[in-house]
Image (cartoon, rainbow, N blue to C red; front, side):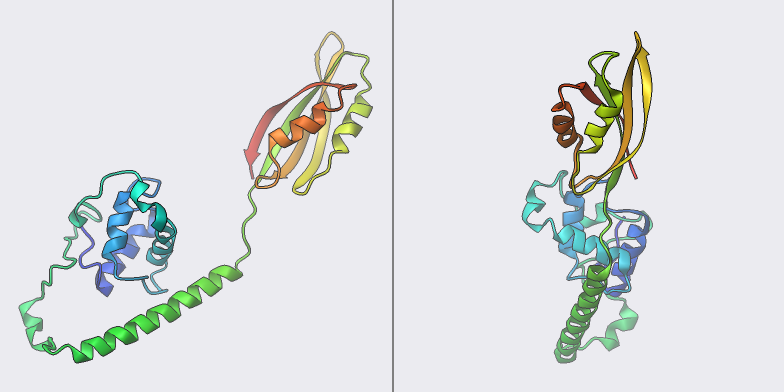
Length: 225
């Protein structure tokens, strides 16, 4: 198992292909497996390796928490595709390429600086494009049951009270009266909420505050949309 040489373009391509249908190296949450591979990569992958770059930036955001991530860090050869061998840091070079090695390293140093400059430019371009994308707003469709005290409660007034509650990220929807027995009907009303702004606990307190009409409130259903 492995990704080849993670410090080489070929190794990064293997990593990118591996992450095409995965969010993390192992499992469904960040772990020490991600930390091990992250530390083996010399820097952000180029912008054309989108999956690897997205993963790299995501794991980088856990930099201060990486020691507390779950799992045990293993050798690099314990991760990745089964048909690829890890060669990161091995310095292995085919004999047929020996004549191409620059023993003095001066050109390599210049190329390294140029590669780093290009990588930084590509990363800046990627971050710029990402920043321009509108953020997705997480919403939920919530169905509430609002119960009156008895069969003499003015249900029209009860619904009017409920709908009078206004908040940023809250939109009231359809409603109906549902029989519960002994001539009593409860108000069943739907609302759309932005998850970051409105929680069901924030609705319960103002609704039950109409104590002349409302006995209790509970959530019948809640689905993300």
